[in-house]
Image (cartoon, rainbow, N blue to C red; front, side, top):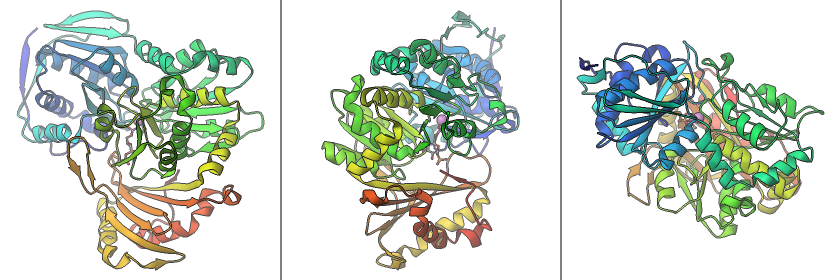
Length: 543
Ligand code: VG1
Ligand code: CO
């Protein structure tokens, strides 16, 4: 086995987005494309010689080939040991768990999360640091800079490593340990949650359905929900990971997890439903005939954390991404703890958690998590809810209604316009910024604009600043409209419009959010000139 030094030329499009580098599979299949990016990671990840690195992915198309290539490159770059999930699989939260538990130097996660898979779908790769979290912008930017000047990569001339069974192998001077992808994660979950109480709840006849969407959480959910908690066989649907996710988007929302939603909204449906995404870090929570908005979910978890063993000693603080609704802010205020507002993307929560400033955090995009790891965590959120349900013995809808009664309701919706022409989408953002000066103080319908800005964040721990994180139109009554361009798409541009208003009156809490927010939605479309600039008369996805 010899180390080969392969001459290469830079690609200009390897800047990581909200969560790693995401491109079409066909782009990644171009000669040297994957290798250039992996070498750029190794060149930017500090002193990796002799260190241990975790490796795994969500099982999507190209996962297998990429894993073998990365193993050969790791060996050629003098990495000491690779810990890889069996069959090359590791959910994003499980990868974070393993990095932390075994104190590794970092990890490489192969996933394009909720994006479609298969030969014509998307692929992705991301680097996590020793705290188990996504590399901060300082490092992703260094990787990008390196990718622009790279002229060689190192790879070992070796055969594929068998990954189907746990065990250890040698590749050149490097050790490869194939680990059970579920065990460490399941053990951590047992430490955090009251498994006996959840087991009792299920034994009493409480029923649930978990949709793994043919993605990575299937094996995790079978083990935790069915084997360890005793949920009936068949609780987990679409539980076998497939390279193309069965042709669907592994995106747990009302649009893409339709089968599950139909079950929960039928008379003979289960009491509780949940789904997770491609790489297992997102969650959707459903009750009988009831959908829990992700921002509300974060607020409920925060308000009820005292009922869960892992959080019984209190929360140091909470954090939410800027577009996430302010529902959790109200709970934090009542609890007397700090609430931080960060830009979109989990990498911004890492410093706050490492510094002990926050315990729970979340995003409106079906992401919730805590300082147990440094990624958002889909099954963790499901178990948190089950623990609350076991403790409170009330239906999901009842818990939510009571929450709104106590704190008021933040009506919330996100409208996505997908696959827009990039220039048109940028034009909307520029047009909005140009209106800032004339908007402040102006009356729009029954709302008065108090402030507009493009959100900028200074990390309270390391002082780094991230600007241009989304346009905010803030109204005097606390309502908000936020506009952002997505950083995870691979085709054209996706415009996300987030709309929120606060309703203290319980008599008005039963409205449909699309109805309650209708006047603000109209204002959002008008201010952005969305119709005329894009030719779209409706969003592609509403969540
Ligand atoms: C989206 C979400 C963001 C999330 C990110 C990664 O990013 O809005 O909240 O952190 O996806 O999640 P964007 O830039 O497209 O809005 V995942 O589960 O795709 O890793
Ligand atoms: Co994901």
